[in-house]
Length: 315
Image (cartoon, rainbow, N blue to C red; front, side, top):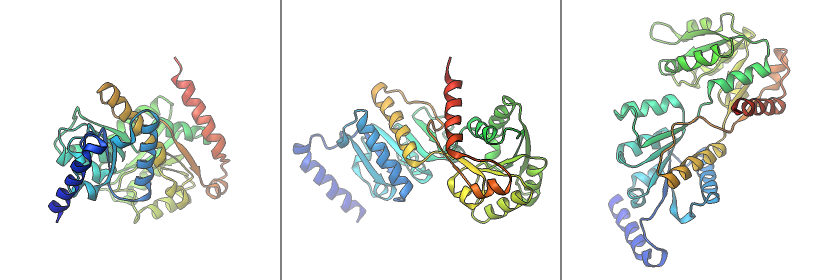
């Protein structure tokens, strides 16, 4: 059935070729891991921004991963592939090893895991827009919200621990200290959390499914709250669950930046390097802030953080 559908789709495209132009002249093919709201939001934002900067709408195809796996012929000759989510990246790298690819809506550790699975450590034809925020931005947000905070607690997992050097460098440049614990076969969650919270002013959550997942997050947030240690989350969902605040990028913001990266490649034939989000949003839990005696004005905090980043970029 899949082959039949592929043939019918190809016949339709070829039949319309005389009316609509070359059937295979796609510039960009966007493939989403599923049809969830975040993926749709990012894809819509990507298309809108790409068209705004000059890419013709008919030169952009947006497919779900199921449609891609069904054998849509438009993926074969598109100049650029854009994956949204981990599953889409994994499949595109498996089936399109030689095509240029930009990965979006994927945490850095997940991106590096997929590269490792494909035995391609530093492929020259693949770039990523990480879902995570740079550590420097998160630490600056914490300093603005809690000026006296100096010791940052972190709970590492087996994958996220590879990011330890990046956090250490960001802490050292801000004269801040680290209190850490690592979940492993020899160190269960409760022991690692106790070590991370030791004398910590804040617990910085670093995304790692082996540590932060639906079965553990409530216990982590509750233990931190009882220790009177606020948590800096990595998504609005964690703020709703009891984290003090989070810095994150929306799917719309990610779509805009992905379109900018794609436009650069289409114009220069040069793939941009891996990037962290340029634009960001903040969310905060006023109830948690009040109960911990913290004054939290999310709107003002966001304005101050953006101003700080602009000042740091000046020569």
